[in-house]
Length: 196
Ligand code: GLN
View 1 (cartoon, rainbow, N blue to C red):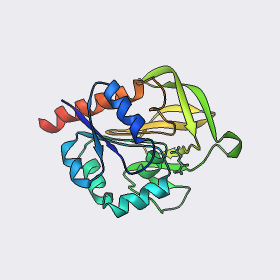
View 2 (view 1 turned 30 degrees about the horizontal axis):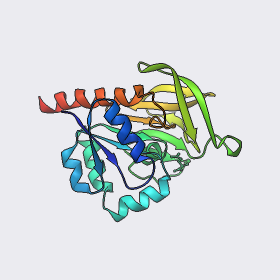
View 3 (view 1 turned 90 degrees about the vertical axis):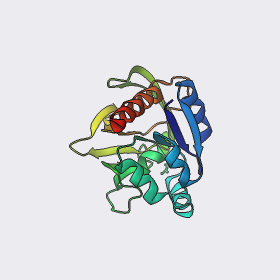
């Protein structure tokens, strides 16, 4: 069975666990780096990216997650998780994992719009998708191999670069599991490719 890990250091990891279960995959609550060996794909949840980075350093996850992604295993970053994946943040080079070729802006929708919901079309994944944004970042630029999957208000809010998936919003907070199901399919496909 395909097994998805949810990084459970901080943030909305419980909801992601529920969403992965609803998508038909097995789930591991990842609290120690050794658990990365047990999973086929990893979700990095929303929360607070600088706090999560501190915990990633404390529990020595930075290089193991980079190696996991470099080995072609899928990683899905949502909201703060997207910020952790990005190769550029707010135009500076102070990046975290830096594995996905895109530039992100934190808290990008401004104070008046700290949280809101929007109907999105996510290319190849879902139409009329109810997306929940909470102090969300957006993607300012994607690299040439990164595909834009959804935009809102002229800003990129979901993208995929091969086995790496990222979104600005919280796909785990509603009962619409289509984006998580898309990630589970990516993981199933990569498992077959990596095994052959
Ligand atoms: N703004 C947060 C950050 O910079 C992310 C918000 C979220 O994950 N809901 O980490």
